[in-house]
Image 1 (cartoon, helix red, strand yellow):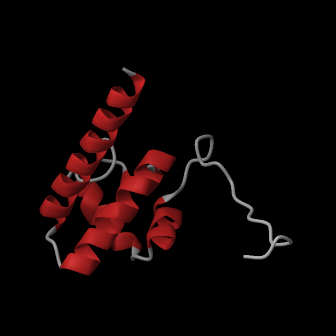
Image 2 (cartoon, rainbow, N blue to C red):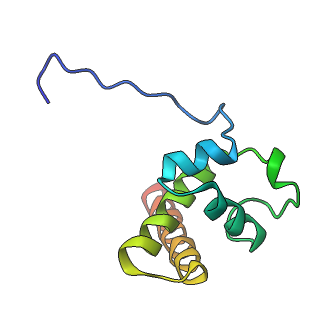
Length: 99
């Protein structure tokens, strides 16, 4: 990247993504997102997938899960458990730096 290059982005904390937008951001099909919602891996367990909106936390989690499934051929439940552990380690690291 040269000095004249500028990175632009949008903070997603105030933006809610649709199922299709989340799928596109994760390079997966919308059906992948729906299946992961229905099994409780993504989202809050809502039954109304069509109207579901995803936060930046959901986007980060979905990307991690999709990469683990793709790169390591992990089953969805195992990928979700690994992401849970990664999030827990991040929380513990934050706590130790604060203390």
